[in-house]
Length: 307
Image (tube, rainbow, N blue to C red; front, side):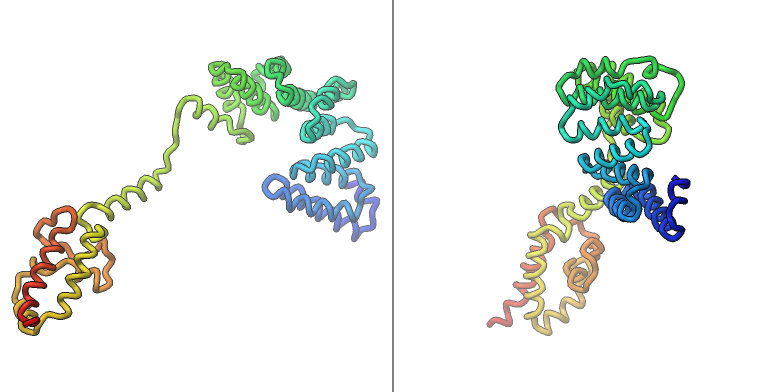
């Protein structure tokens, strides 16, 4: 790529290079942004093969398969290389043409691919078989010496994962579990979710500990007899209204009353959070009966003022 960019004027070459760097940086996590940078590079240097290839992969990552296929074909015409053959076949799958992908898997270009390219082509062909509902044929397509090799290559985890997934689709769960486990062993960079699939087959269910703590705190706030009880809250409000109309004599009498007789609604009215309300030493029965008793007492004491 560097040699191709050197054929451009210096300032233009630098601009193109910056955009290609952004494509490579963003394509995995922000494919739409990578695509936008690829379009800028393409507008600046459409006759550079590396630019056409980057634009193809950016379009492929955003599922613009027609556009991606056109860019890959242009790259192939410029370079004469067949290394993009598998991804071109996968674009045909993306366009809903698995038969064309299968036809490409049988072309002479496949024999010119290196080992990694041939494995990629096998993965695409197996996917095309599955697209056509030929699950058993897909399983056979993935079988080969590379599948069971003890040597771990960059494509090993993906090949084993595809094989396990095909087995599971065919209802061969025990074999699928075995190959998901082998995929986990080979997946050193986390390129697949084989570990999650394996845990699912084993019936392992992950629980968020933080969620459990939140549920426990909610239950403690809403326990029977707390100030969150609707009946208790309503009784407290009635008691507050009754207290507002009490006579000075009653207020004096209450000032001499024991602390345990003071209604608990005072804490809520003072702005203290309900969960931190003052607690009486006397037990309070569920449903807020203590608050109701306070209401009865307040109304009885206010009766002389009404006469």
